[in-house]
Amino acid sequence: MGSQGKQPPQRVDWHDYFMNIARQVATRSTCDRKHVGAVVVRKRTILSTGYNGS
Image (cartoon, rainbow, N blue to C red; front, side, top):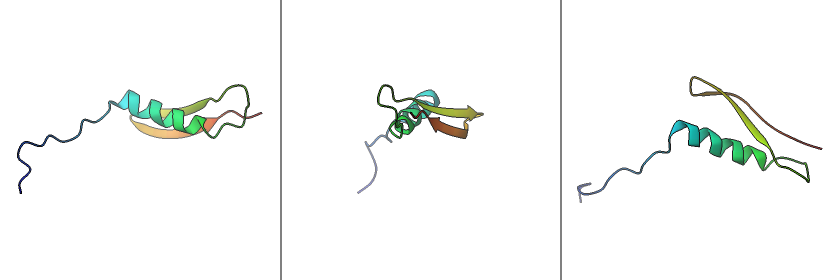
């Protein structure tokens, strides 16, 4: 069984990758009104993450 005919899965672009992480971080928020997540990135490296709380 070879890998003929199979394409590797498509990768999301960097922007979507980091936005998905920010959305996941937002799930840690303790605020009842708004869930906010943040990811600080420089040169495709995550420097920090954070979320809001009440």
